[in-house]
Image (tube, rainbow, N blue to C red; front, side):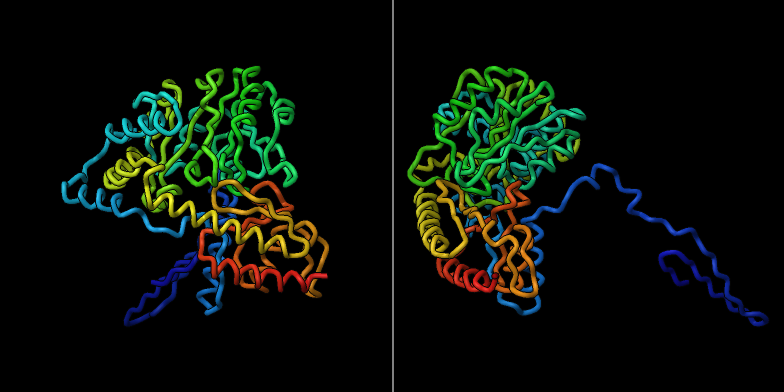
Length: 430
């Protein structure tokens, strides 16, 4: 018997009359079976560029990848040892849906220690990464047609998450001249009776921009006038800041009860693969997210939670490994800023946190090397991948088509070589 997409061929042989019987079925376009929900989503631009660069590497091409949002450091030894101990202690049974109580208590303690915020352990939900924490809350809050305001540049997944939960993204643009941060006037003008939530990150992915206490106070002042708007505060890059203290919008009492604080261990403790994130929120919302998570993933890995418990208990101010990582990121930032500032047509920002730089490259729009015409940031990234063998992420994925994202989560040698290649390729555009 032989099968293909639309036919079933039967071969039968007898002593008197061998014959062939072909049964033909109607072809089915299986794409039509997919939900409108999944059809509305786009592939993550960061994952797309990672995939493209991997394909070139498999062909033997030397590609420098500056597209991935992952620290190039190892998880601290004490954190790894905590996981190993949990394995030996047979901590391998189903955990509580919202996370093991010692970890939730430790997170509440951390929020008080580092941020001056008071949460009960029952208000903490531990999830499989901060991305799930955001989705839990969006599923709990959004109905069809609800609007969610998103300052641009934004993390690539925010609009797709809103759409997945049935909401409508409303984007507020901010330029490099604004250090990629919106102001209170822009926020006030964007809020309508349909606005259900607002989501932003500080420090920001992709720009590395950080909102000051006064800037957050001004935004909180707008939210005070609109009590129907919930606030997603994504603080996953909290520990990676240069010469400044982290500020959370949750510190303002007038909006505290509407803040959904999102955080995790991936960036500050180089634990991307452990998949542990968490949210701290009003009790009524935490209860709802507990119900949602219980129906589609249940609790996070017990071994990962044991590792996270050790990390969360670590005071960042006394962690030599964390402070070394921050110092190296700052050194790389300064290097990349200096190098890009010398490239004609590239206008870099100088980020105060995270490990990204988001220069304006609109100078090159309309230019060509004789084969390729650059009409967008996506065109430029594809050109640089092909011509310079440097993988970057286009700004259109972050809501800012005039820019491209450099990740400096790599060695100084690779940063220097990458900018050298990029500068040479850009010189060919006229």
